[in-house]
Image (tube, rainbow, N blue to C red; front, side, top):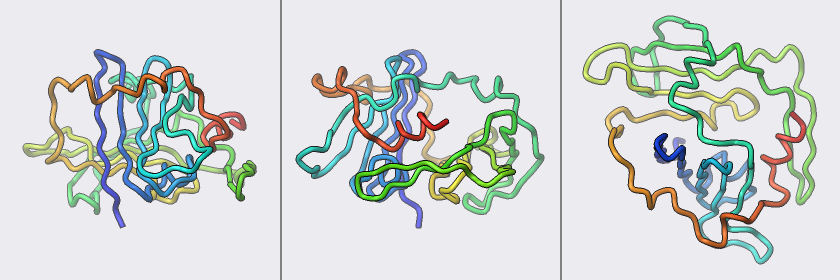
Length: 200
């Protein structure tokens, strides 16, 4: 079943925030928590915040991936995706244009967690799965995104389905991207996302 989230973006500050609901793939898979979590992209990298109760040795807020910063607004254009034509998006019910990012490297390994131990194994080859994106073809919502998919083992659970009626373009409140003072210089330890980066 779908879990609702919110994405905020401000390229003027080079920041992006994604709020993931409790039980979402990102929170469970990457941070081993059933709580809601937030990812804040900044010029310093990707910070993650866990909401709700945490265990005694768990970090609530920390810098997870120092080299993963906010994507520029034209990143998709420079990725040179392949245009797939018009596709009916079942989730939104819209007729959409679809592009596949087949010039980007597909994932080469999968990371699994058993208790406190992380392991990585190569994916079967050939692995022909890529990110895709869709946007509305016509009407008042023409050009608005409805999907960004993630390839790999998530099997659709990590995909972003956008509600075109909720898209608001305008200045963002700077407080949306604020973090606690004691978080900015704290690095995360032993997160699955770090392990995945190490194996790539």
